[in-house]
Image (tube, rainbow, N blue to C red; front, side, top):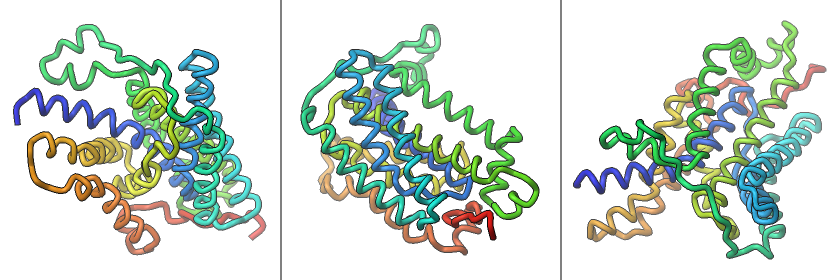
Length: 308
């Protein structure tokens, strides 16, 4: 494999892995608070369609991104009200949110199918882009990719270096103990849920305004589900999340690479590998023994009732 092909693969992996990274960051923060939201796919689709329509009608990509994040937050707020206040099962509510988001996004975007917008263009960072090899991989991307790196650093520092991160983890480990010492469990969980929704919406807008600047039904292609598995793979650690997102990005494009190299392996077989890995992880996600091994928040998926 020559350097030029390797450069193209790594650059494509970053682009393909960015929506996974964004939505997985939001889900990781949400799960650290003890809330399991399986509605990421639906929220991504709503972010994609609302971001596209807002950008297409206003002519502003930034406005489109903001509307996409707002759409994701409204969807997550719906999840929060049903699962937190109405005490519905988090898994069932998340699945319903995905079904609802998939259908609603198709309905809202029905008149925009196949339409395109002028998406985000790559920004070449002066000086840094001239670094041999790495410069071309890291510093010639659209602004949403640079934004994803800033958000990743901010989330990593928040979770590990701040009092807010400590409170988030305390709520996720045992909300009743956290409530007993005066921590605002419901407020913390709602903020985590809303952050997860904003990141899912942002990831959706990346799909419709940067990755493929157009709208089509189900354009997220199951990335919301892969992100859920990615959080487990990463053991709820930010640095592992970054590595995992880009590895999934490589796995997602390997069928194209191997086809280009002339290897006689079914492209359909290779294309399903990320989804197969996701399925295996989802089987283990409900196991308490596996939770302990991966350092999962111990109250993950459990409803909190302050009256108990």
